[in-house]
Image 1 (cartoon, rainbow over the protein chains, first blue to last red):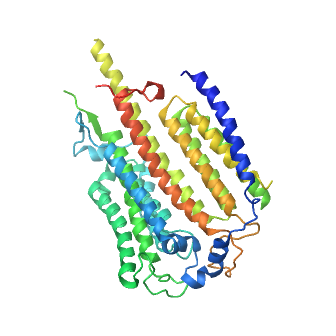
Image 2: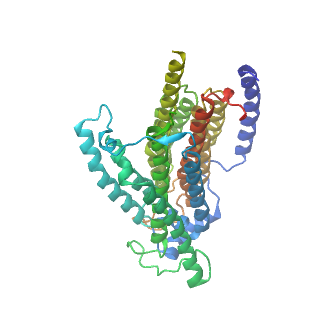
Image 3: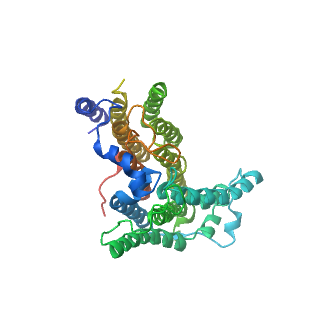
Length: 252
Length: 90
Length: 114
């Protein structure tokens, strides 16, 4: 079917879809008029019951921790898919000599960019670790902090030395980190099973809300998810980087 | 507060339209980064700081890096094929 | 004015679908899919909002039950990070499709014929 037929069919379908969406959404309560019971209960007793001041992270890693387990494994599976799809095919090889690692810089990479980029690595790793560990106190947690941790080695790439990123974050270590994070979260759940008889139930002492070591297992689960998300993003970026710069068709 | 919310929603609607109607993938990547920023402001005004943190981190670094590397790979392949076609013609 | 967030969510959904249908480049279609996904985020956060509510973080304010709903924020937060990797998976498929067929035009992709 050619383009004009497709677009006119889409016009008809979009009109129908918009009508259905608007009619359906009219049945919702007006914006700002919140009727839900679950949210009010969590807001009312969350801090005293779970000793965590950030209720979004408390829901993520404690009250609804099973949903987070599923989401974490969606992440793991899709990065596994990226690594499988971008594998080296039969007609390709990796064109990389050892001395090229130092010579690959961007054409316009000035000294200032390189210095600034290398200085950012430590700052990004520190900020990422802070956000992961303080998830139960302030906005943050494993997912956000994990992506910030992954941008640490990426700053080396952005500073103009892109093959150095493979030296700092080699494939074996990031894949190990990814798998260890996923397994760590399941081990926390099994700890709950062993000590309290319920999978993923909070089994560590709760502590005082507002202190760093509070809210039981939320900290450990947050660190496990942070390591897993950082590993997953680094694996995905390394695969794309290898494809773009290193893998070439075999010339024979 | 209500003015900020209306402004943020309008910004998101305009930026979303701009992303979907862009033609060139490279330009669309930059518009997507701006759209992520508009979404971050919207989430912030809706009193959701966790979500805003997640969105800004993903849409400014996480996604554009993958897209730009994929576009680079596609361009390199196109150049290789053109070179091979020229050599075969000779 | 109380229907505006839901209207914006419906608009984003439909315009994202239009971007997927009317493009000649696979990467443009994948990026328009991101717009469709973000329509659900706007809808979810619009459902959970409460007028005059604060963010559900009680580090410096006393605990109140009139804060904004935290449950929908949990769903959207994990969703954003995961959809980024799913988009990466689609981009990997597009790169390999270009390697196989020589073009990113959806009309030129046929069944593998060997």
